[in-house]
Length: 101
Image (cartoon, rainbow, N blue to C red):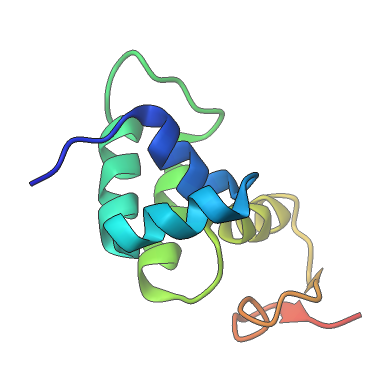
């Protein structure tokens, strides 16, 4: 087991600093990142717009190849009854309801 600062987890998710994100991926697997986020999602002090949407995106993230943010966008589109999500993201193109423009 290891302990990490919240900023380390955020770097893995947001990828606002690609070098730091790469280093975090060397420490944590996708599953470990997902498990940490799932635990935060289910912790009382944290509030999410749609807890079920976040958990669904985490489930897809666990099984898929795209980034978590992509699965969140896909879910929000489904909530809005969008028939198709258009993206250039190659990893997300394998999902149902996703196409290239």
